[in-house]
Amino acid sequence: MVLAKSFKVSAVAIALILAGCGGDINITPTVNDNSTNNSNNTNNNGSDNGGSDNGGSDTNICASYESGDDTVQGTYDSNTNICTYNTSFVSAANPLVADITLDGEAIHYFKSSLFVGEDCNTSEGCTINADGPTLTVEAGATVVFDNAASRVQINRGANIEAVGTLDHPITFTSANAIEELDSVGGGPSPQDWGGIMIDGFGITDQCSDAERAAATCNAESEGAVSYYGGNDNTDNSGTLKFVKIDYAGGLPAGAEVGNDLNSLFLNAVGSGTSIDYISIYAGYDDGIELFGGAVNLKHLVITDTQDDSLDIDAGWQGNAQYVLIKHGSVVSANGDILNMGNGGFEADGKKGDTTAEAPASAPHIANVTVITTDNISARDEDPSIAIKLDDFIGATWYNTILKKESATQTWCINYTGDAADNVVTNTVSIKTSIAACAAISNADSETVTTDSGTTTVTTWFTQDGVSEVVNGSETVLAENGFSTSPEVSITPTDMTTIDADFFEATSFIGAVDPADTTSDWYKWASAAFESANDE
Image 1 (cartoon, rainbow, N blue to C red):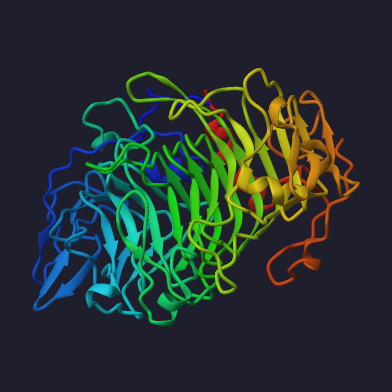
Image 2 (cartoon, rainbow, N blue to C red):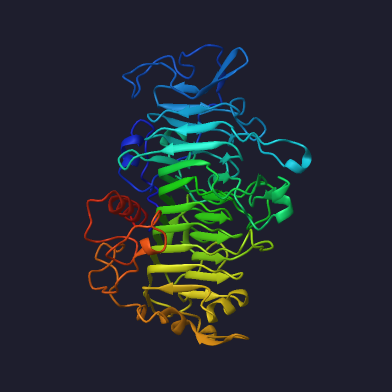
């Protein structure tokens, strides 16, 4: 579970190495800030000689766009295969308003944020371009940043099309993971860069019905202010597929401690957007946080994030299937061992005011494995917990495995007063699942009493008559540590009876079928898990 600080990756070799691992690599930038405005010029502006992965050609393969009579293009160094883009190419103050494509054979180093489309608070008189620019990232591309505030931001109306493959994933990561960009030599650490933020036109309870009707819904994002929300839960912001996001979660300068960026923000993102085969590693804040919307999620591996792995909030109405979460530890660039992980899930029903149009979060989440530790998070000294319930959450988990081998200072399930009544009334529930937890709950909170009645966390977990609570030493995982053990005999819920358009029927509970070792999902999960677990 520690970061191999001594393992450095050169820019020339990174495409081959990243394709076969889950992100346990090192990077940091020192390339000169030499992106240029190349008027109709496709020559190499970063080097006069040397070969590249393009047959030794010095042709500039960096992204470009037209601006008036000029072509604005990144600077290409064929010796390192690195494209460098400075603020004259793109920044928060200079967002992209034209389509660009990031070549799959290059490393793309952004010296500021990659803003796609113009951010707009409609209450201030601006108009959102609903047909904004598209960022296309080709399979195999590596995209790196060197500042805690730098991020990919897809504003409302813009799109991202980042479609990798199992053998050639797309990697967004710290510049310190690239040997040629790591000036200090310490390698990457959580919080090296900001992450990916997608702002959509979906429904969030942070806006009122009247604001949605008047097109004046402008919810403010966490971490760094941008605006999102609308009245279209079918909105399409693009595609992320076979994408890795490593070492993100930075804290922008001047931001309040704790108001960090997440590895992947999905702010009011609609169901037209595709999020599939995602690996998130060593993020400082949440792995994925959803603020409303109805985007669906599939094939997620979230390992060693400092805060919550999957954070639900503000009335998210989507679904998720195949989610593998592991808490552990990493070694920072300065050698400190960081215990990673608060909640596997932080599940909040609401953030603002719920209405019939914007109800509390009530997702269906199936085929989940959450592996926790008995450690306290280095970030805020909170315990490693599998599921945290709060703010009138109405979610249902199916076919889920929770695993905690020891519990001297932690437990598996936590709830606050706002979720207690939903536990008693079974408004939030778990079905066909198993908790192999040394402690299912905090001893002081095992009994749940509200005006609606009394239950216990154990009774709540097992109320379907199928789910089980067993000791943390019980064998529920296979020898590989992440797929389901053949000894688990619980019959899974057929999820096609819940939503046949999204869910798949399975013959197993937990995230990964141990028998199907040739599937893309098994290989994706195995590579990410083993890389995060590599000491």
